[in-house]
Structures are given as C-alpha cells and as structure tokens.
Image (cartoon, rainbow, N blue to C red; front, top):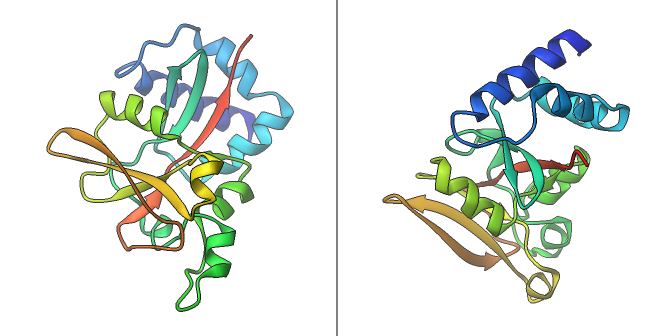
Amino acid sequence: MNEDVYKDKLQKIYQKSLDFFSLPDAFISIYQKLNEKSNYEVISKWISNNDDLILAYFNDSYLLVDNFKEQLPSRVNVCYDLEARKNRKQYPSQNSAYEIANDLNLDLLDKDEYLFLQSKLDWDNKTSSWLKTPLDFRQNKFAYFGDKKFGHTFIYHNGVQSYYATRGFRLKFVFKLK
C-alpha cells in the first residue's frame, strides 16, 4: 500500500472516530506515530483488507480497533488459542483467534476495552467476540467473550476449545504518542 492511500485511509478512520470518541490529539500527530516503520508494516497489512476500523482513546492509550457490526464470516468458527485448538480431541477448529491475531502482530480486545467501546458503539447483537483473558483464568481452560443484547453489554466465559458459527474476535493495535 502506498503512503498516500495509507494516509487517506487513516484520515477517514480518524474522521469517523470523532463521531463517537473524543480524541485528544490532532490527526497529524497520530499519523506520524502510525507511519513509523514498525507500525506502518503492521497497520498497512491490516487495513489493506479491512476498511472498517475505528480509533478510540482509552486509559491514556489509543486503540485502533475492528469496527464491523457483526462478526465477519472469515472470523468465526475459531477457538480461543493454539493450545485449545491442539487439545481439542474431536473436530478441532481450523484456526484460533490468537493465532490469527499473532500472525498480524495484533491483539484481542480485553473486557474493559470491549465494555468501553460498546458504551459508544453497537456491535455483536447477533454474534459474540472472544476477549483477551487473564492467564490465571485461561489456565483453567476458560476464556471471556462478550456480546450486546437489548442495549446491554454482557461478558461471559466459555471453554477455550469451544467454537461457534457466531463467535469471532476483534483485533486491536494499541499505541501512545508520548
């Protein structure tokens, strides 16, 4: 992706984000950070196949996040992580949320980020999203997921080996300007 297309896509994401979130920094400052070589390599690969991203400011960090209303067909039927996929005895999923995130050098939203974003946005009314889960909970073979029903956001837990046609995940890229 050439730099002009990259900058244009980021500008559109920034402008759309202002409809939902207060962003404390000007676009040019954010663009300069996201145009640094290591960031550019990660983000340009991600946004070349994804036009639906949003930028939010949460806990003194920026989050660049998937913003599709419901899970994409390419993102469902995945268990939580590689260990869960390999340990499933029958009918293992073809992939996992964390394998895909790691391949892109991105991460999953955690439950606090998901709750914050859902307070401003309206996702997962018919689907759900795996969420980054603390290691102590994950070691017990469970992971968090969230959805939104009737205007309320819910966080649940499920076995990490499970996968469903309506459960996917949302990716994020976290950065600070200072």
